[in-house]
Image (cartoon, rainbow, N blue to C red; front, side, top):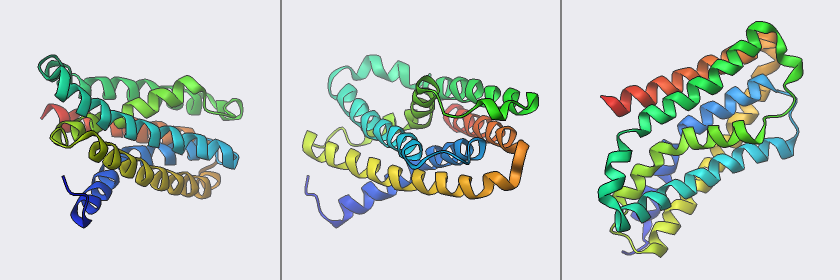
Amino acid sequence: MRLGFSFFLNSVLFGVGLAMDAFSVSVANALSAPDMRPWQRFRIAGCFALFQILMPLLGWFCVRTIAESFTAFQRLTPWIAFALLLYIGGGMLREGIRGGREEREELSHGTLLLQGLATSIDALSVGFTISEYAFAAALTEALIIGAVTLAICLFGLFLGRKVGPKLSGAAPIVGGVILIAIGLRIFIAGVL
């Protein structure tokens, strides 16, 4: 596999497509906590980028080793992503309805990891499409996808931070609805 211009363009386009869910969740996170510090924004974007790097590599590895068993799991990925985002979004909705915005200073590690998993689970399929690549090419593609995701998520956090104060107390509700809508989109696209 030659790492030419079309390889890099394809990797960037994969990154943009895969980062859209993480972008939306980044906006939702910033809506519910518009006063987060720069290191907190980088922590969120970095987590999403890391998952977007790891998932294609996991898919690549599984196709090259345990493809038959992994194919059965692939059918469950839309269900898993929907359940995770419904759980997280539902929590944000409850928080917004109860008026608990003041209590939510920082996103917990567990919630952030669940968000990272839920928004990157579709990146497993990229690992299937790049299974014929050598490991170095697969790693390069995954790193490009991660870099694109990092940039897009940082922009999403910036955008949510700017819009968040204008939404006042409704921000957690809007964020919860966004997460549930993303979960539904992943579920519908994956099942249909």
